[in-house]
Image 1 (cartoon, rainbow, N blue to C red):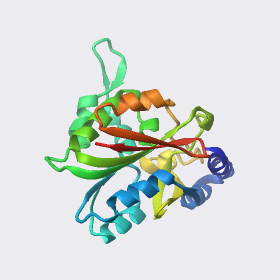
Image 2: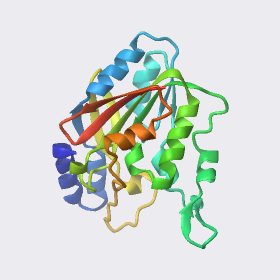
Image 3: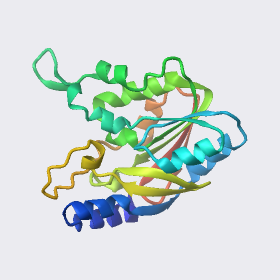
Length: 234
């Protein structure tokens, strides 16, 4: 993510034990987002919308969106995907993720439909086997003409691109906050090993189009910090 990536990684590596980890997790970098601007404009004049935020929980986002009269549901998909209970053996004895078990416990809304979804960059960090089923499930729980905002890293971002919590700071601005892996899963080894989620893959435009092939339309915005911003309409 260009300058944002470099700044976060520099602070992350210079942390000193638990105190350093806490400081890094609290730091926020500013980011302009054209796609967020369009997303916010699309929901600005609607009443009683139901919005799903699938990144790490942001109190900022909940307060801002509920303050506008919207219902907000949140699910931290990447943390859920790391649940050790989902690790099983396949018919050949190889270790794999229980996709059916994941979908049974996550994105299960009992008939609730959503007008808008904030996917952020979660798809880039999810285990490969979960990406397609997650997008299919999201499609199934969105209302027709519902809108989805997602970010995808470009190849220049590199595997060390940090996983962040996205806080909506304004109509077209975000604050990015580093999410160490040990913060999300509640575990720490106590020796200053500040593990973080690694980028699993890089989707090109064709891959992204295929991923959202069941949706009605898709619009790309190429940002300066090695992110593709994508706005998708159900």
